[in-house]
Image 1: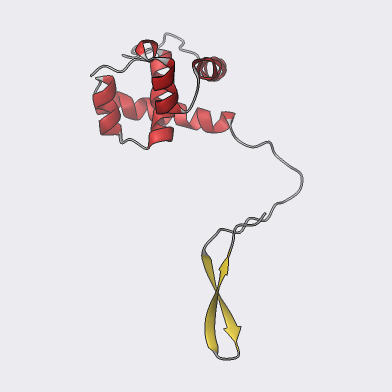
Image 2 (image 1 turned 135 degrees about the horizontal axis):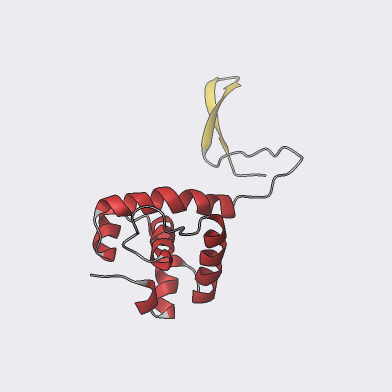
Amino acid sequence: MKLRARSLRSGELYELTGLTGAQLGELMRRLWTLRPDTGRGRPWGLSFLDRVLMAVMYLRTNLTERQLAVLFDVSQKPVDGVLHDLVRLLGELVAPAPTDRPELWIVDGTLIPTRATRGLRYARITADR
């Protein structure tokens, strides 16, 4: 199977990535400004758009590298290279803006031991910000 971004319909693209065609295009444009293909080294077997699609699909669907390799009809090594290269850049793009004030996060479901009058008990903490 050869999965390519240009052959996907808008509904299929949204199911695989959670993005519309325009959103994927904007994401591709922003990634291109961070890491353009300079033409140096061995050329990629996939287009830049297909590599962005692969990275977004990896994050959205939690497919393994082996499964992505089968879908895109490439070996596992280029999949690893694409994910190693683009997932970090995607993280930089969607990172929250730095704030001056520290924030406290409590994870839901965390059991914290508390001392009660009748032995050791656990309190369940709910998510609160």
